[in-house]
Image (cartoon, rainbow, N blue to C red):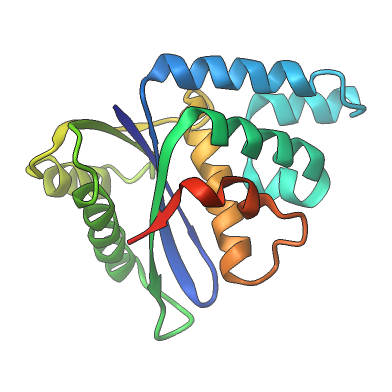
Length: 191
């Protein structure tokens, strides 16, 4: 099994989310099906090129809610479970060192709540020392077979979990007017 991981931050919360799936092939098939469903949506060619390059949560939440709904429906089909953990910020600003410690703590909590052996793919930070710290902290956990960073442009699973993070963020802020979170709610678990 594979756990794709991403994070998001608001003024009040730092949230780490994992999407658990059977295999990379299941994600690739789900991503292909999702793109086929939305390929005929009326979008300008330039916008379509940008959007189809990488489905970023903030972009589709603001301008393409129907596409985000279709993505959430596909995620609900392919994911076994979505697990997230959040940190309530005491101050509005969470400085880098504290943020790194909180990220590792929340990810450890998520991984520890999965019984099966898993591979973890987390969204790269382009900060090699932090990525190494994540790997060295999570790899010793009992159920970890492998942990790597990934590029969200190349990893559809990371695009999916980025959009899950967005839905959880909107839900936590009571600002999910399109009901993105409701589509996946039955497979979401907070730890």
